[in-house]
Amino acid sequence: MVALLITSTPFTVAQDIHCDKNKPCEVGYCGTNNICGTGPDYYSKAKCINSCTYKAECNPGKWDSQYFNATKCPLNVCCSKYGFCGTTEEFCGKETVKRPSCDIGSQSVKRVIGYYGSGGATRKCNPMIPEAFPQGIYTHIYFAFGSIDPKSFKVVPANTGDEQLYSQLSSLKTRDSGQELWLSIGGWTFSDKGSPTATTFSDLVNADETRQNVFFATLTLFMQTWGFTGIDIDWEYPVDIDRNGRKSDFKAYPRFLKRLKSALNDYKYGLSVTLPTSYWYLQHFDLQNIEPYVDWFNVMSYDLHGAWDIGNKWTGAIVGAHTNLTEIESSLDLLWRNKVSPSKVVLGLAFYGRSVTLATSSCSEPGCPYLSAGDAGCSGEAGILFNSEISDLIREKKLRPKLYKDAAIKTIQWNNDQWVSYDDRDTWKLKANFLKSQCLSGVLQHWALRSTLTLAPA
Image (cartoon, rainbow, N blue to C red):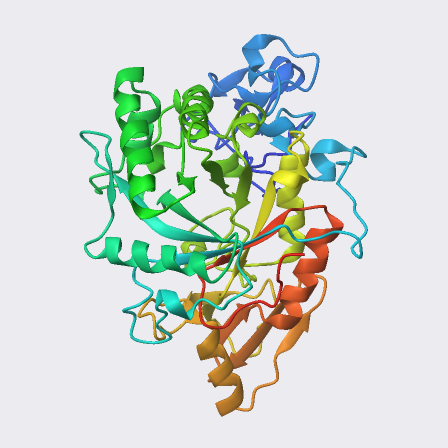
């Protein structure tokens, strides 16, 4: 029997199954028939000539421990008969995930969260000063981002001038009764290689209680000083070596959050945690032991595709919408597999599009190849266009957007080779109906701009 070789992600991708004494297997053992395979049946039928120390991800059920690394898969996903973890029928057979279900008409949106980036007021196009937040829409405003001194673990502003923005945002609470201002600490660049804070989250959660207490004390003082009533931990990502994590993060993070929640409870402050949609990163979050200590999770259901896929042998430079609802729904299944309550899930929405330069103008559907990120717009970053820029393109070039209703996204193509996927009021409504049908508690708008989704809490 020859094993079907795939990646450790929940997506099925073909591998080169041929090997020899000089060419090891990408995955599996190399037998005398020069074919890669897994498990005792294959290993016993063909003596191993290369890659003989290989172990499968998981145990399909009857293998001895010498053949696999773990008895079950992360996040309770399925183990295939060849010892690989995944979520498709190839791994799970007829097993399905029980998804939450609510009546759209009776389900309310409890939280509408708007991210405010510290550079929002000074960007050259579509700038947004704190006073521009529309009234009566947001239940929470997240300031992104706060920082942590990597040596002392004291909470500090990330940028010069942030304190002034704190005050301006806090003053909005006087016009919107009940609105809360929260501080989000971290973000993607916080853990970038070369950043002074690259290992700070990992260092903090693995530190002794005395050092963690410095963080707790300075955090609560910081929040009292500037009017924050909650904190979001945006760690991207624990455990993953490429993101400067450690293996010990998996168990240390829930312990840290338990202590953090206890410190916040003394002041009745809230706590949320930001989660990825990707199995690759989410597998390193111990969801069942984290959930008891958070008020809710913010799911980053955007940036599912982008120019970072170029050169990735598992995904490749293939056209895909970065907020595809069908993919988002599959990603949420990872939460349901781990008994996360939908009442603790907030769905992220994007106010920008991800653009690419097509390989050929005649092929612009999902699955078509592309060459690079799309031409840079106002942000100066290739591959990103603000919604205001997309609206201008549609108007000026008299474009006709294409709606993909199942995916709840729209796309446009212009200048022959430029393509972008984005959301607007039509697709936000589709996504809002979806989150209500799944009993989710709210939405998070990333990043907040002058244009807003008409989805007031109810």
